Image 1 (cartoon, rainbow, N blue to C red):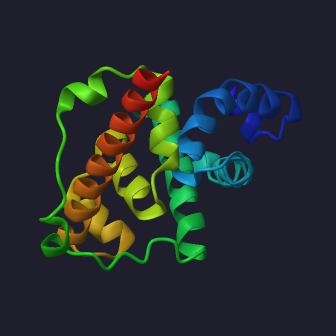
Image 2 (cartoon, rainbow, N blue to C red):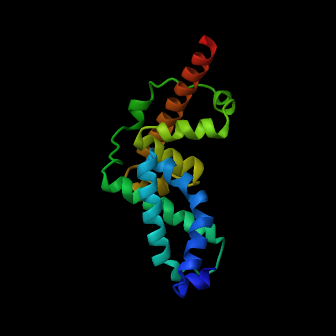
Length: 176
């Protein structure tokens, strides 16, 4: 299929799109926070992927290679909007109250992803990169042009934010 795409086959490009779009859209929406922006990122990601297809060397999984393109496309979108301006440091995060891990474990995947999507932009970006994509704080700092301390702070605040939202959800369920 990749060979056919490289030769310009629209049919192969459509087949590759149909195969990857359902897997890449959740990545896009996790970073974007809303469906419309995620659709734009998905489209831009495919344009980039098809233009760089000749750089795929066949090493490792193609889906993993493509996923990096979509993550980078999402990050570029956030940079354009200046949404990654994060100036909080660890000192400001020390007063935040932390919840328990069991709260997060009690949620289903879809419920958790819905909450992740609702995170404030800076929190969501670092959370996605660290927890879901496996980047280190050093890598995140370099990619986002922030300090490692800011990356750690944003992750800590994201976790606290998620835990508070989970508590709210649990309390709402008890009131009904």
